[in-house]
Figure 1 (cartoon, rainbow, N blue to C red):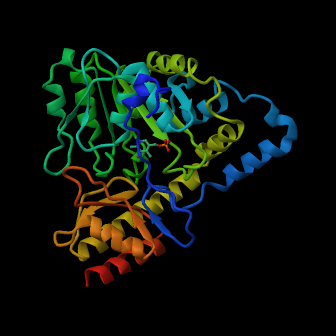
Figure 2 (figure 1 turned 30 degrees about the vertical axis):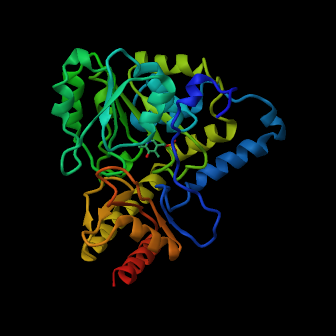
Figure 3 (figure 1 turned 90 degrees about the vertical axis):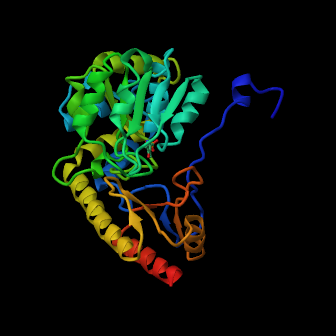
Length: 363
Ligand SMILES: *Cc1c(COP(=O)(O)O)cnc(C)c1O
């Protein structure tokens, strides 16, 4: 507290990110990073960018991110005018809250979801209501529709949801977008690339038909680039223009030169992307089975983490016991989910260490 603070700062409840401990030899399964390195083409592109001309860093980067937008557009088969790029999807989401989700009627999102959403509402003064997930932690689209089309300022949720990992089917999202035609519907697809083996269930498939749907994605998870901070949004040009207006009223150069070339290279390496996302999906099926074998109840996950509880063991105690064995997972002290652990998929070797540690702890 300080008398120098603006009134809005006094009222903030900031987001608390998962910890990034400096310890060596940690099995780090707490913040949904990818266990595999990024495509080798990313490093090549960054080295080339630096090596071409040592003087290059003295110049501002491309304020529009044209090369990266083109790479996103190619990957999704949309026009570049349908793409917005930003310094992480958290930044893209922040701009989205300010540009599209602040209206007289409240913003709606699930009671159990990404805990950054209420933080942005606090920062931008957005009224919101959290609607309960059902008993199996699924989103009930009818709860949103029954509000009435003119009483919803907007809707946002991750798909798959976080931290549950549960996926809402695309036809349900289409039903929501159709039933609330005057409300922006934002689908935060941080984990969608882990949502299906042969087809990725992305709502980008809906943006052509639904002018109110905006999809956000990140390169932090499925592209192994959490350290580079790159995210993007896809929607019809009117939505993209709103984001660009906010961005150009905030920071004209959100992506630095290295991020722009590295992210473009990652998006262009489709073969590497397919290989790593399939490996993570395969590991998820193995870990889910192993945890079930230890008596855990594991929610069906479409993400790069699993959400699980043990009927006979307190989740906080389990997390503490794992930590003593140098394995960190995420535990949320929140209503309805305080008996769950969110466990990020590691390599198969890391998952095996986790399963062995849990066996020892439960014994
Ligand atoms: C990780 C995550 C993000 C943020 O991704 P960044 O691009 O690293 O900021 C956004 N939404 C959800 C649901 C996430 O889990």
